[in-house]
Image 1 (cartoon, rainbow, N blue to C red):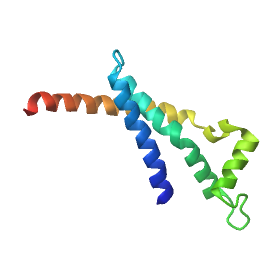
Image 2 (image 1 turned 90 degrees about the horizontal axis):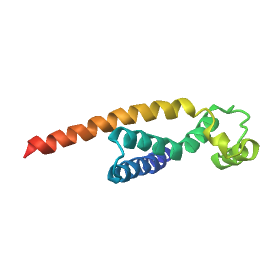
Image 3 (image 1 turned 90 degrees about the vertical axis):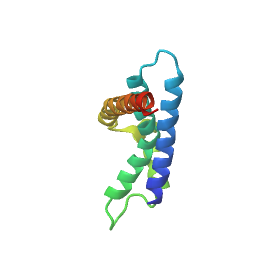
Length: 118
């Protein structure tokens, strides 16, 4: 559970920070701020997920990597930093669209509640 907490703490910190600051920029539509927030989450956490996947899919009898740090070093050494983001395009496209919609709905709902609540 600790790696999940570390990943989500980093990811959601980036997510909400991006949304907060993007909303303050004049002329940035909510959907763009939402999509960018989703990208910020995944761009900061995909390397963690990539290493986790490598560690979870290696043969338990003869593991290729002795630790997550060793797996990280191996990926960076053999594939470069871009290896940490291998296969990320579908995830990034999905999250951009999903978070653009989700945070637009959230923003509109909060505006509607603010207008009618009081």
